[in-house]
Image 1 (cartoon, rainbow, N blue to C red):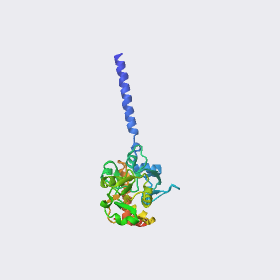
Image 2: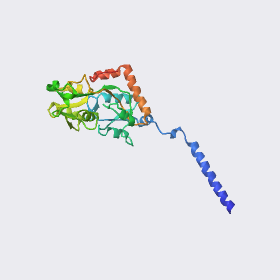
Image 3: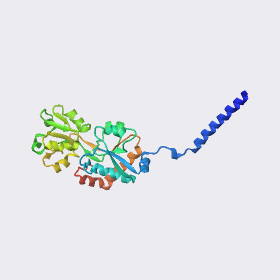
Image 4: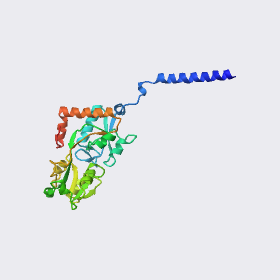
Length: 274
């Protein structure tokens, strides 16, 4: 009886071992996890997160839902390189990092006025820079001579307006300890509010200020040639997507070398620094 039990257990063990070997032999490279680029190509489209509130880098027309801007054109170049369609997904400055890092992913990458910072690089991937930027101000044309330095702005009687959650608000809180800081939810509305006297100064970027000065003669950017900070704008994505990062960087490098990035700067009236 004891021998019969041993035979049964031995038979079961052989079956288990042979089953494991069979399963192993059936596995192949097809079962390996897809890379990010493979997944995007199989899907046939790349999903791009953008705020859509930052002229002339990323703006969504409220009437049509159409996106346009410098960053939007960069995103389309990336989609062309991958030979896929493009879909834009709305994000916001307060939720940008969380939206990029969430699982499952909301989008493959984020673009449009995103400054390259060490803090972002610690938790996410950032591409090479494709646009120089720096903090500056918008104010009313009639008061351009009033604001010639950061000290001129940092006064209790000066009302400074910023959008929430981004680096503009962070800069204002860190450097304007005496001015009155007003947080307004919609970034694209702030220039008009400055022009109408709802606040005195908008903290913005050298990439954004020239556009509003051009379209609204009530506005001025007196410190455009002397930005408070210097940096670059890039593409943001989750860690673990190094293959997609390489594609993005290749697009940026190719556009720098063939002159198309310079032409894009000229189209939007932006300073070319490469």
